[in-house]
Length: 344
Image (cartoon, rainbow, N blue to C red; front, side):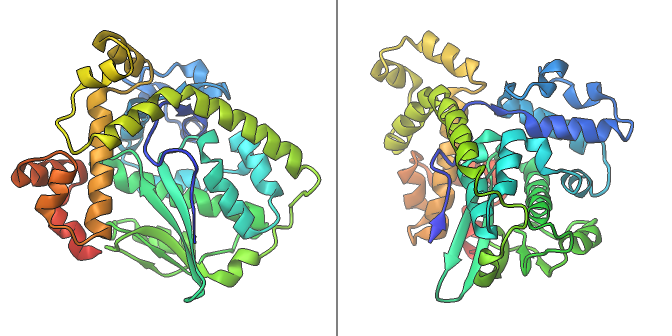
């Protein structure tokens, strides 16, 4: 059984800036000037304090690069370990009211679009092996930030779970990373409190199924219906704003095997090409960027989950020349299609 977000698993439209606000505040307390973090992002400083302020993928990527450029050892641990549910407003408050670890994890997945979603999270429950995993998939698709993005999200999840469980020593049974062991790995081993392995097919926490039923001491069954109703209202608002992009994602996915053309998409949507470009620009993206992300996501899925040849996979996502597909995939992910298949 897989629990996942009902909305698109790709980066769609704009997201709330909660995480960036927290990161800015935490680093400011360490003497880092806000201007260094916001350099070239076009993010308004006042906006970070506004719960309704939204940002796009390019702004997050630039912001994250500015954070990484600070060259602070183990910075994702420093940032993620300091986060608290209150930093996420309605999302964090509702998370604390969940009545078990399972409900907390499922809530975090279903309502992830209420916060700064830069990874896709899924809960995999295997009744036969009696082991579950909570999996993370990078949504930024930016090679130089993938490790930081995944590390930060893993630390944040454990920090929030520990608050929900009211247990600072809580840990999952194992943690698997897809990347190589970093220089700061000792700090992570101490924080996560479980065996960590590297070079795995997926980034995920692994734990026995019986942990899912653990009670959360701060749960509030009386407040939960009202809080969930409020979450649904905000989530529906986000979905409505992103409806245009979802339509475009669906069109591209259905025509991915063809020679994709923005003019054809504009015609099918009864828009001029100029209007299409403007509407996409307002969402902080472009036709080319969406095509790249969807092709990358589809290629990964076909490589890992099917036995299709690399040439057939390239054709399926719109590449007539397998060498061009291999080159594009290497540029997207930092590895070749064959290497990805080997480690899976």
